[in-house]
Length: 114
Image (cartoon, rainbow, N blue to C red):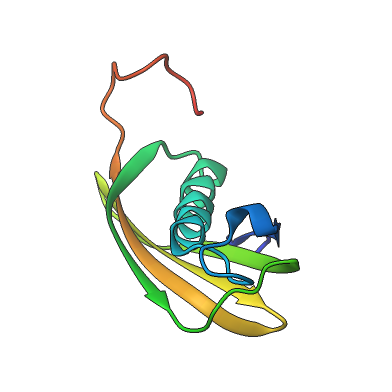
């Protein structure tokens, strides 16, 4: 996590993840944005799960190129966290998302951050 509280990662958009030829599948784009927001929460020591996710697809995401994803925590309350994420490629924003996450209920799963 950067000093600004933003997490960053890179992803090689391989053809195995394409929807249409040469374009990354929208479900993969969504998973990258959701995963970045979840990891941002983890970096802040928070365990929460996706409750609502809104994705805006702005441009096609090309396969065989690297995409960069970033996410930041915008608002936090007792149980609700609002985050934003952005996917860029060739210095252009290709997709962005807003997510509402809720505190992970105790006793679910094996415990610990997955």
